[in-house]
Length: 129
Figure 1 (cartoon, helix red, strand yellow):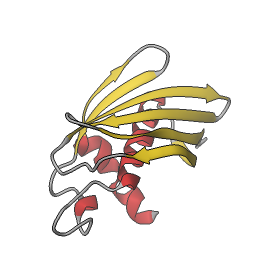
Figure 2: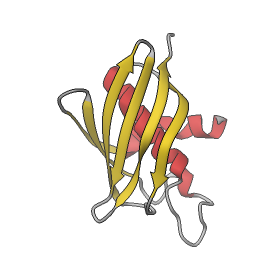
Figure 3: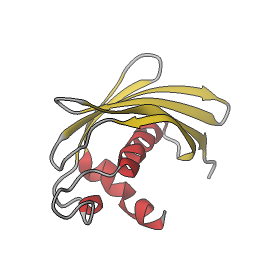
Figure 4: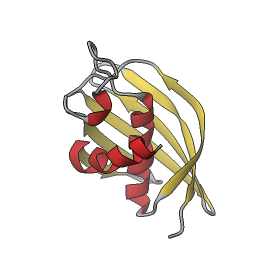
C-alpha cells in the first residue's frame, strides 16, 4: 500500500488531462498514463499494461477531487476488467457518486477510444482530517 500511495499524486498531477462535472454528481475524467509512469515498471517488462489497482486509484482520486475530501476505500463491488490499457492510451473515467452520511458509493466505467476497459463500484468512507 505504501508504494501505491507514493504514486497517487502523479495520477492526478501528471496523468489527469481534463475533468467535466455533470448533473447528479456525475463526473468524467480523461487520463493518459505516459510510458515512464512508475506503475508500468515490471507490469510487464515486454508488454506494459496499466495495473487494475491504478485504474481503481484513478476512480477514487477523481471522486475525492470532485468532493474535495479524501476518500478511503472500504470495498470493491462487481469490478470487471475487460481489456488492457497500454501506455499513452486515452482513458475516459465516468463516475456517478451516491452519498449516505460518510459513505460514498462510486459507480464507474472506464473506456478507451476503442473498448470498454472496466466497470464496477467502489465503496469509500470520507476521511475526516
